[in-house]
Image 1 (cartoon, rainbow, N blue to C red):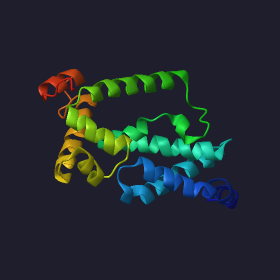
Image 2 (image 1 turned 135 degrees about the vertical axis):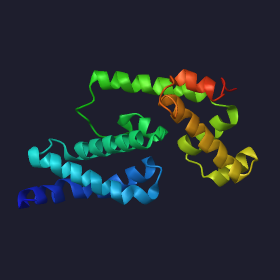
Image 3 (image 1 turned 45 degrees about the horizontal axis):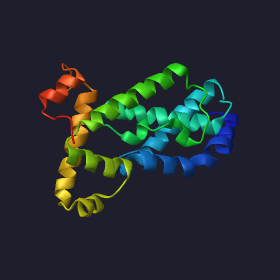
Image 4 (image 1 turned 90 degrees about the horizontal axis):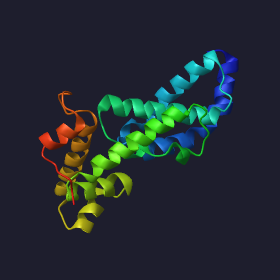
Length: 189
């Protein structure tokens, strides 16, 4: 790496490290992976900057972070609601947010919302409280009057059902709606 690129990185990217780590800790479901993800983001930023320095380094950094997290979610087939949240919550401008990407995002969010409403009531409550309200399992158990182990089972079942429905089932042959019927979860109440 040449010294000009290194100086740019230290001046334009590293000052945002604390905010980046906070963002990753909030958005990623595996806290022990945050430092590795941060490292991967820095590599992607540097590789891109070698070709052309971005006009808005902070926006570019968080855009790369968001894309990397989405890639990891797709690779792990995990439904992470926070990653589907509105990009505006990052408080950065992302030039690449085309009308097509906005429409696709709205469509995905609508689809997820529809599938979420079809979860069994208790699974829906637990998934919402854990992933959206960010409550610890112990607090969810207390509020719902159930054991922590039951909270974990509902959480895993709810996320598993959503993942299967979103990605066409574990074998990949079924449409999401068929998967919902096949694995036996109804409209929810």
